[in-house]
Length: 67
Ligand code: FES
Image (cartoon, rainbow, N blue to C red; front, side):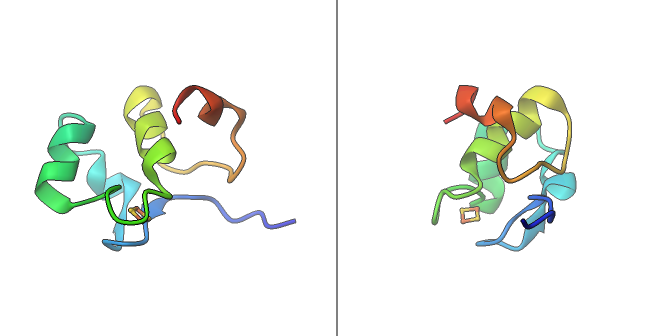
């Protein structure tokens, strides 16, 4: 099993640590385009703004609440 953490938007090549500086998801999306290309990182971005954490297990059980 892969133990790599999800910690970035691959499409715009920015880490959650960098994106966390924005006030909220909408502001981050507007400024950087994160989470709008493949949308693969979108649940993680939502979880990041909710939790303040910047690295997540691929199958973090909390993601169910942030689809
Ligand atoms: S990884 Fe973030 S939109 Fe594709």
